[in-house]
Length: 264
Ligand code: SAH
Image (cartoon, rainbow, N blue to C red; front, side, top):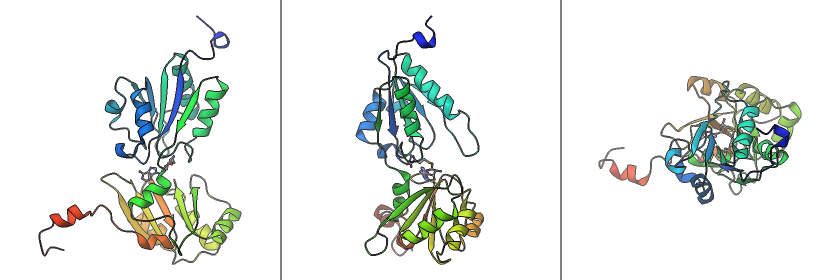
């Protein structure tokens, strides 16, 4: 048996990092679907379209490395070790991530690990929830004359005062991922930095799932509203005037026509 240092750098194995989009199969790209079809192993978590993986990646070994907030069944180091070990066995390893792999997905770290280990790696971009989840609630992140910039931030850790001030000064739309846990710091930080309490806020939970829900509130009331509605992760928080555009796209024309005449 070869020891680690005697192992050949590559044995035909490779890694493809795929952005799976916001969780439904038909928002995967054509390229992502192609890579899944060719996969020997798929490492996935529950933000991507994991439910139909047996059909999307027939014959592949499917490994759930999912992380839910506060609960990390497989650590990042272990995920990377597994990815490298499977590729060293000569396998085509697909790492399927939610949204886009390079938006708060630690995709950059996984690419660097592969490169350091001499394993060929490619990436397939995905539809990021930072744009797609607001859109699912009818909220365009930019709107002519209303917001000509949007800033995507992680709420994983509270922001500094300097960051809040910069955000408040920049204007435009603020999109927060992983922001439910730090909503109190976020809203108070932005108000202290000068944003009005009346600035509209939308909390869009579980985008593109049957449980999708939008809570519309204001910067001043967001914490109370989120508590009352028991808002939970995964959710995208949108802050800014564009929130006034929100509408329920689940009420499609089909639904409207299915209503009996005269029903509201
Ligand atoms: N790389 C991903 C983001 C990973 S961070 C992307 O580009 O979308 C994980 C966070 O993304 C979640 O905590 C949540 O804020 C957001 N998110 C991802 N999918 C979501 C969905 N379907 N509905 C609501 N929020 C989602």
